[in-house]
Length: 457
Image (cartoon, rainbow, N blue to C red; front, side, top):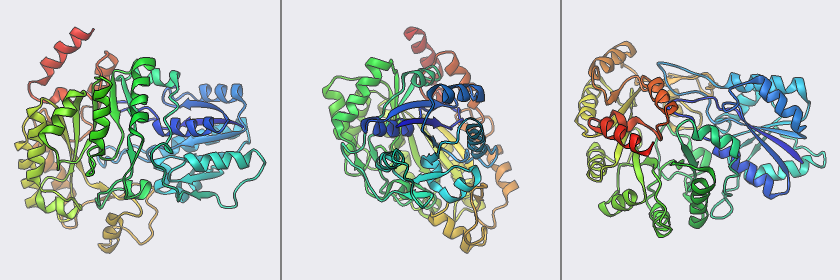
């Protein structure tokens, strides 16, 4: 069957992210003998005309649309993406009447509400590689499921998780927008953060990909696509079982050295692990503390204290690895006192960049939704497609915004609101700088990075 796959993501700040999930679906369909065309709406300049031309040229028998994000989870500068999907579908309907099926992490968070909103025919909730292959096989016979939402009960692991079918044309766009290429090493999340949808989407058990297959992907990206910077998309890179160390050992064995970044839990890291990460190219570590006091960390379901954040930050600094922290204010248990304490804690972190959010986006199925319902911040079963943010009862929003603004005023490496420097970072990518670039905010780093870039050029 001829299947046309569309990445609908249009978010481009602080840098554009390659549609990895779409390419893994493409790989599954291609491995099952189907003819695939991948189309990226962002890479096409968000052009309806380009989409129309591509569909007319390919003449698909089925169209799949990947939804990566519902919105940008930023209370102070909301951007919503579902209308983009709705408009894409409306345009498709003017060209062809083939069936349209949705998928992706954004869709899977609230599939019924999104399907109704955008007007597609079907949707796959959860892990899609096996289900889409079966769906297309049956569609080729003219057989479609009775239910519009197809729910995944499968949990793929090891070699069952396919290598992405990276599209060269799409990849070139993303490499020109920061030289960042995406790789997944595992699925699932073993942590219990009250606001997070990862355990709902991927399960609470870690499922690793075959290590050699992952490193094959890395070699492919470097040798055949010219990637100069990698981002590992795992919810947490440093899993407690230490699977990430096996991956790094294989990278070291093959003598691959390429700058890379990932999300880390600020706990359980050792000097030996940090040394291995530095040796294999770790340039920037994004730390998932999320809260900045012991009180709010506990209320978010974290298993560590702020002293662990300090220690992990210091460990990376020792190995000259840049760190970024992301903190949310307004957490359950937040008070004026914890806000002030948190601001001071963040300021005490050395050699790092910190980004502050106000409020927490409430997502269905999470413990935070249950808490918000009990506290009567939302109604039972409320449709959360329209963003609703949790701010602890009794904490005045205006006071919180003014306090955060004043608390981080004039501190270059403490960014509030979190998107305040997005346009500047995007401009640097256009000049040819690679990677996340927030490490340039760290005191003493900007001059060194400029010198390094000039040498590379």
